[in-house]
Image 1 (tube, helix red, strand yellow):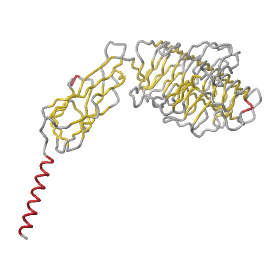
Image 2 (cartoon, one colour):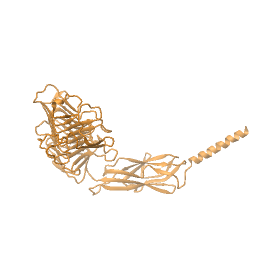
Image 3 (tube, rainbow, N blue to C red):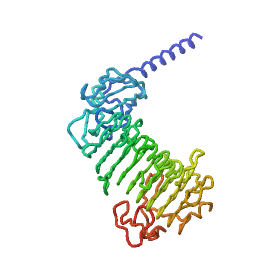
Image 4 (cartoon, helix red, strand yellow):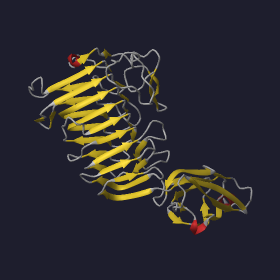
Length: 465
C-alpha cells in the first residue's frame, strides 16, 4: 500500500512538472511563429475618410507559451495606419502573451492626409513584431487618393465639375430647381451609403466614348470585399421639378436604385440617356413613374428590376440591351421590363412606350416572363400605346405577344461570354447571334455603345458585332 501511495505521488509530481514545462515560455530564437499574411494591401483610400479595417493573425506554433516583447507601427504616431490588437487600440504594444498553439488578431486601418497629388499615390509602413530577439515585419501598403469632398452639399447656382480629382459624396448632393450641374468627361463620383444624388434642377453629363472619358457614379467602398456589392449608395433621384437632363456616356454602378424619375410627362424627355451603362443595381436600374425618358444605346444589366415603368408616361428605348443573370449578388426574381399605365390604384393620363432594336433577356432565378405589360382599366388606343419592334425577348406565355412587331421570341441572344460564377458578363454579341443584322434601319442611330459605327444592317441591342 505504501509503495502504491509513493507511486501516485511520483506520478502526480511528474504531471505537475510536465504541465509546468508545457505552459512555460519558449525563449529560443528558433520558436515557430507565422503570420496569416506578410503584406496587407489597401486599395484606393480617399484622403481624410479612412479605409475598411483589415486583419492579420499571428500564430504561435509551439507547445509552449510565446511572449511578443514588442509589436508596433514602425512609423509611430505619424503613421497613416492604426492598430488594434485583440480589441485594444494603440500604436505600441509590449509583452503580449500567446498561449501554446494559439493566435491573436491584429486589426489595421488607414487614414491618409491629403497632399497636392492629383493621381493616386502609395503610402507604406510596416508592423514590427519583436520576439525572442527576432524582428519580423508585416508590410502595409495603401493607395491614397485626394478628392473633392462634398458633405450634405446643396448646389444653388449653375456649376461645373471637372475631372482633375474625383468627387466623394457624404450625406448627399442636391441640385436646386432651375440650377444646372454640368459634369465633364472623365469625372468619377463616389457616393457613401448615406448619400443620394438628388436632382431638382438639371443634370448634364458630358461623358465621351472610351473607358477614361466616361463619367462614373459608384459607391465609395473600393476595397476588394465591397467594390462589387450592389446597394452601396442610394442612386440618382430626379424629382418632379427636374427637367432637361441629358446623360452621355454615364456609368451608374452598385447603387440601391440607379435612376429614379417621378412626374414629368412631356414631349421633351425629362431624361435623355445616350450610351449609358446601369449595372449591378440592387432594387431597380430605372424606376419611372408618370415621367418621360429617351434612351439610346444603353446597357441595363444585372439589376433586381432592370426597368420598371408605372403610372404611364412617354418612353423611347432604341438599341438597348436589358439583361439579368441570377448571381451571387442579384437574385433574378422580377422581369427585366415592367410597363404599366397604373400606379397605386391610379391611372396615368397616357402611356406611349416604344422599344426598337432592343434585347430583353434574363436567365436563372424564377422569372417566366421577362417582359410584362400590365394594362390597367380600359384606356383608349390613344391613351395606351406600347410597341416593340425588332426586339429579342424571352417569355413563356403569349399575353404580351400582340405588342411585338417582328419580335424574336425565346431565342438566346448569344452574348459574347457569360460566366456567373466568375462574375464575367460581356454583353457584346457573338457572330452567330440572332441579333446580328436583325434591326430596322430607320432609327437614325449611327454608332453603338462603344462608339463603333453601325452598318447598313444594324444589330439588335446596344453593341454592333
